[in-house]
Every structure is written in structure tokens, then in C-alpha cells.
Length: 249
Length: 276
Ligand SMILES: Nc1ncnc2c1ncn2[C@@H]1O[C@H](COP(=O)(O)OP(=O)(O)OP(=O)(O)O)[C@@H](O)[C@H]1O
Ligand SMILES: [Mg+2]
Image (cartoon, rainbow over all chains, first blue to last red; front, side):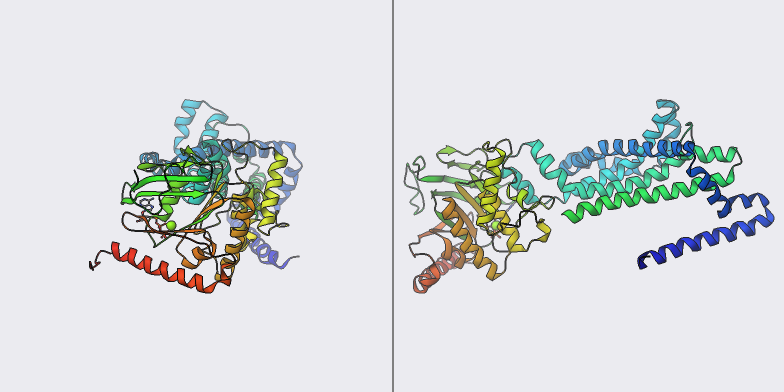
């Protein structure tokens, strides 16, 4: 085993031990809490791991992440470029964006449901709304930090707007966009579960409420483990993308 | 029509095929900092290396950008191969003080950057590759095509920037202090390389520098810019054979001339100049 893995694994094992001790202690007073012990959770997890229904929930959640992120990119990158390029646009929108950014996306839930109806649409809206800010702000910062000589080079080649955008500006800000994406994924993943607790009938957030209603507490804990693990993997993937791009450069 | 300036091209030379670039009575002012230069006329002949020399802030870079078509003059005209310049000419290329390579492209793609752009002369992919290969070989980087810019030294990066300009097969190369960020040894190498490749490519060069020795080593003609607003204060045509290191007396004599002209130019514009 690589030495770099020893300490992280030790940390995880320690957390599991604390978790076991806590459930053991608390179960003395509240017997139902024994259901939340790690042994129960991992047993449920191994059952769920081969349950196609569970994989459907995971698939639905990941698909929502992808759609929410895609929407956030589709809005955040152009708006970020506009902010970086146009001083007027930046001055007009900055206070507004800073204001909107500080509102918990979940506050919009009732309005989103009223406007978009019950179902996936309000969830997509919430995820995109939450994720757009880090992408937008990082994109704008990337444009502001572009090497002026690259733009001069493009002008010396009489580059068209599209050539300048796609051959210089966009590749020049990919690193910034990717670090925005990494932040966005973290936010989306955190917003996803509560968003899925409202008016949808699939996904990990739904699964947690469903497990609660079925009194299937070990499954509930297993779902929490799955959420943590998937979030970790998503973040790892985003970080890998970012570093991969930087290494090339 | 011209003020009695030693540098103004003789009337009519603009249209002559021997002149790559002709500028007449150019003036330029930034909105914020006022006039930068005024009434500048100059001509650059085919295959000629012209050095624009002058103190810091006298407007050399601005003049270069106007001549390259990157900024529009407030007054005067710039002609490239006889045609009025409205935007950077496809047969001109730029090299800056920083190599400014695109870090997401490898050396080969950096050297070929922009060859396929819409406003560049259309050439097919095979010809494009051949040009890039040839240019990289000329600057001594054959075999490094797949390296990333981050893996290059400053001198190598500047070689790629030079190759990027050569690949365009320019009639005129604009270079703004291209070697001033390099160490003295690399700089000397690059100066020799520049003279060598522009001769082989039969390109003319406008080289902005504030290094008198660099100008003396490479130039066919030196223009000294001074004043506020800037103007061409003096000019020298050099006939010292290459390599100029072999002619120390001629070089030293010219150097002293330039130094004293520089001092006179500065004195004329210094705020506390005492009229003699
Ligand atoms: N974008 C700009 N906006 C306003 N003023 C500018 C701008 N660029 C340059 N200037 C001013 O124009 C003058 C000439 O600048 P320029 O860069 O052409 O000088 P230079 O001769 O190239 O100097 P250096 O040797 O330091 O490169 C300077 O006074 C400078 O402050
Ligand atoms: Mg300059």
C-alpha cells in the first residue's frame, strides 16, 4: 500500500470507530439508534449495491447534476466573458450578481415549483442557479487575466471575433472555468439532496426520505455513505480534469 | 511637402516596389496622456533591417503598433506595399518582448498559430506544415515540435515566437524589444539568428530597441527617436560589414555618435534644459 494512503485510511477508520461508539452509547437510551450503526449501514450498502433500483436513483441524481452543470456552464461562461470584456456590463451586473449569489438557492423552491410545476424542472433550475455563480465569477476573472499579448497577436492576425473567442479567449480561460466547475459541482451536490426532497420521486434525496418513511434506517445511512462517496468522486474527477489541463500547459 | 527631415522617404518612393512600408507625417495621441509622436515620416525598403532606438517612453512601441496597423494614427498615412493600411497586413508579423506562446498548444501548433485564419492567405494543410517545419528548423528547434511551452527556456520560447512570425512568410517583421528579457549570451545568439533568418526569408525588419549595441550589430539603418511629442531625431545608414564584431573601430565611432545624439535629443526635451 502506498504510504500516502495510510494516513487518509486511518482517518476514515477512526471516523468509523467514532461512529460505531456513538451509536453504541446512544442505543442504550434510544434503542432505535442501533439501526444507524456502521455494521448495519454497510450490510444495507452491500445489499443496495446490487439493487438496480438503487442504481436508478444514483443515475437520476447524476443526470440532474450533469444537466444542472451544463445549464450553469451555458449561462455562466458567456455571462462571465461578457463581464470580463465589457466594463459597462460588469458595472451594471456586479451588485446584482453579488446580491443573488448570497440567496440560498433553496429559497427559490416555492416560486420555482409555482412557475415550473412539480417535477424535474424546478430541480434543474435550483441546481443551475446555485452553480452559475462560481462559473461566472471564475470566467470573468480568467478573461481579466488573459495575456494582453495574446489578444494583440490575434489582432495582428486580423482574427475574426469568432477566431479570437475560440482560439484565444476560451482556451485561455479553461483553467479558470474548470476551477469554477469544481466549485460548482461541490455546490450542486450539496443542493441536490434537499432539492430532491421536494416533489420528485427518484434520486438520492428522495431515497433518503423514502427510507425514513419505510423505517429502513440502515438504508438511510447507506444512502448517506453513497452521497458522500459520489460527491468525493465527482470532486476528484473535476480536480483531475483541472490538473490534467494545467500539466499540459 | 515634407519638412526638411533627413528620414522622409524621397517623394514617390511609397509606390515604388522597393518600399515595403511607407509612413508619412504620422501623428498619434492617447486620449489620456496626450500626443505621443508627431509628424513622423519613414520608409522601410525590402530586406532592410531598421532599428528604432530611443529612450524609455518616447513612443517607440506606439509608433510600431501604428505602423503595424494595430492602432490608427490621428493624422498621416501608412502604406504597406503601396496600399493604405487599414488593418494588420497579412504579410507582416509581430514579435514581442515576451514570447507570449499559447500554453495550451505545443511548439508546432504555436509556430503555426493563425496560418489558417480567415484573413490570412489561404494555403493548404500540407504547405502549412512544411512552412512551420522549415521555420522551426531555421530557429534551431527541429525535433522540439511536440514540446509544451512550459518546457522551454526563455530563449527557446522566443525562438518559437520568431518561428511563428517566419511561418507567415512576412514581407516585414515588427519586433518590439524581442530580446530584452533574455540574458546577455542568449541575446547575442538571438541577434545573430535574427539577422540570419530574415536574410534567408528576405524579410524586412523594424526592430524597436533601447540597446544601442543591439542596434549597431544588426541594423542597416538606425532611427533615433526623441522629443515630446516624439519624432525621428536622427538617422544613420550603416555600411559596416557583418559580422560587425570584427570592426570594433567603426562600431565604437558610431556608438559614440549615437550616444551624443541621444544626449542632445534628451537635453532638447528635458524639462530643465538650459538653452546654450
Ligand atoms: N495604452 C496607453 N494609454 C495611454 N497612454 C499610453 C498607452 N501606452 C503608452 N502610453 C503612453 O505613451 C507614451 C509612449 O509609450 P510607448 O510604450 O510607445 O513608449 P516606448 O518608447 O515604447 O517606451 P519603452 O522603451 O519603455 O517601451 C508613454 O508616455 C506612455 O505613458
Ligand atoms: Mg516599448
